[in-house]
Image 1: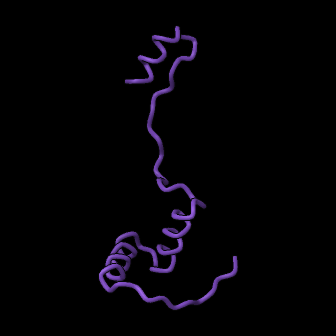
Image 2 (image 1 turned 90 degrees about the vertical axis):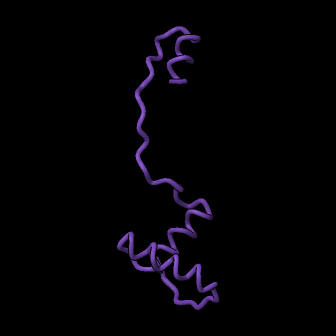
Length: 71
């Protein structure tokens, strides 16, 4: 992927938060900003966390299946 260098004007408090978050995650500001923009434009999922759920037995009657899914 081709990268370009650019300059932007951004509020100082936003820049500070961006730098702090990048440091906390152990990435550089460019990488974090690119990820944020990709999330905004829908190119990558917002949550990169694993989903935790128990599988539902599809052989159950519909009413019981719905109750199981609500738990």
